[in-house]
Image 1 (cartoon, chains in turn yellow, blue):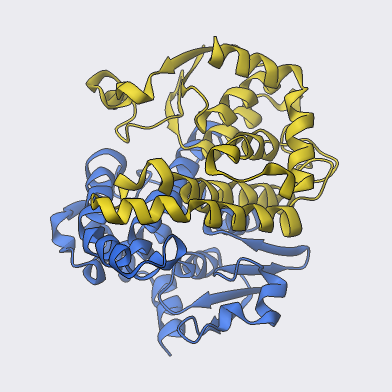
Image 2 (cartoon, helix red, strand yellow; image 1 turned 45 degrees about the horizontal axis):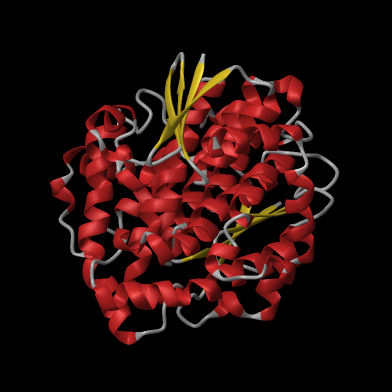
Amino acid sequence: MLKLFYGKGACSRASHITLEEAGAQFEAIRMNLKDGEQRKPEYLALNPKGRVPTLVTDRGVLTETPAVLVYVAQTHPQANLLGPDDPFAFGQIQSFNSYLCSTVHVAHAHKQRGARWTDDPAALAALTANVPKTVAACFELIENEMFKGPWVMGDAFTICDPYLFTLAQWLESDSIDPKRFPKVYDHRNRMSERPAVQRAIAREEA
Amino acid sequence: MLKLFYGKGACSRASHITLEEAGAQFEAIRMNLKDGEQRKPEYLALNPKGRVPTLVTDRGVLTETPAVLVYVAQTHPQANLLGPDDPFAFGQIQSFNSYLCSTVHVAHAHKQRGARWTDDPAALAALTANVPKTVAACFELIENEMFKGPWVMGDAFTICDPYLFTLAQWLESDSIDPKRFPKVYDHRNRMSERPAVQRAIAREEA
């Protein structure tokens, strides 16, 4: 059975929701990120990066959200989480998710995870102060250029939706009013009503 | 015909090499990143992120290296750039490439692209100073935990190889001796001898 190692409210929520949307059989294992459980030797043996998500399969371990989402979708085809079976449509999904992992999540991480890039206290403070601006610029681009509606990729619900939802949940913590982005805000509200999303969040918050 | 917009020596080199490895018919269009050509309205109309790579296909535009690489591989199956046709093997490729885009490239970008996250001069200097340490930590993980050999994924040459090669070419510019990572260094040397790699680099340097 699949095992997902996640952190409460972390980016691993995208994988958690996708497993629920896929109807996958899986065990969810919470890592206490605040206490540094992800840097303990048992976990580093699974995922030497010391981050979440980690998906343990019967073939071995997969890490990184874009990889986990596609794997879950491809191994649960009946859930139809990739839209049309076509390289260009798949490329658009990959492009969107890659932007989330390499730009949006990274912009957000400069608030509490600035130590990844500097240990200078003044520099850390400067990075944190700038996060509302850089994260808002990302969401402006999503709102105005990328989001097709009603779902990220248009009519098809795909793995982009749980991922966008997960990062959009962080807006308030970055001092950004989500109502500045009406399509993203409406998407977030509609996502919150889905049973799969509610199951994942209830498990994380329990 | 496919059109690739690239910057000389930028991360778009991974897409450029992959197109050559795939035997694709394409036009390569150089953007002068130093002069800010990527922020001109004509280019922003194609790619509102104002970055490279941008791949223009007859279906529309794809951006983000991991997405472009998979698209080129899937649409040129005879080149066999994805290894075994299997979701777990594909997941490993995706995991590796996602690490390159979201962690390795981002670590490197704190040297010359720190303005993405702060405009404070002292903070920018602190970020730049730390780059040799953070980038080296990434390559240690690749060398010791991820690289299978002789290619990134083992016996199969895949889209991971041009991407790793492209980022490994930046080591010296980050004041890191590539010989600290013997597998990565040997891989870089073997990649440099491939005709497809030589064609892409010759075009970029011309």
